[in-house]
Length: 201
View 1 (cartoon, helix red, strand yellow):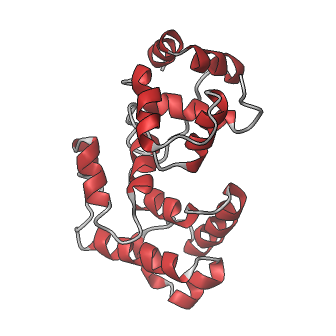
View 2 (view 1 turned 90 degrees about the vertical axis):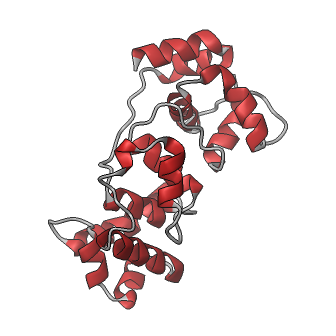
View 3 (view 1 turned 30 degrees about the horizontal axis):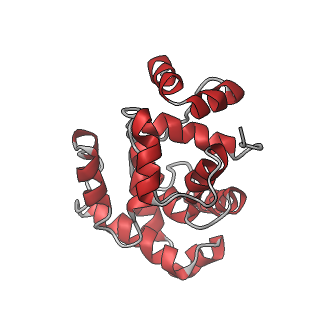
């Protein structure tokens, strides 16, 4: 991680200033399996607090074994709705569970695939989009060079840190991120952290 941070500091002055304010990179990872993607689905378009509350109810009801495909399929749609999931998210987590159990989604195989192959594999499931696949790449597979261009937080952080008039387009994000390669995931982590305070530098 030190090599990544030094690379980012050397290649981007504004990011170097942000890194100095945030401090060491302490990225937290999750296991590369069903539960991690299910949690991302639950979190879509919700605040962190709301997502944690809803997922906490699901995890508590699932019991010690955790949020496994079998545990999710054991709940009725009504039970999942009672935990706080929308009707669409109920369908999505159940569909992912079914496809995991029948082998359509093979989590054991994903670490051996490149980033684009992982995205293609996961997005075959309804409700799993590129953003969810990007989160899985960064926080489960520990890929260091992922730029989540569809993430609203990253776009807003870039607007503030780089003093843009509006959140950047995906093409503009790619341009800004060029000096970060091959450590765009680490740079993204710092941009997320910048949202916790006034990021204007």
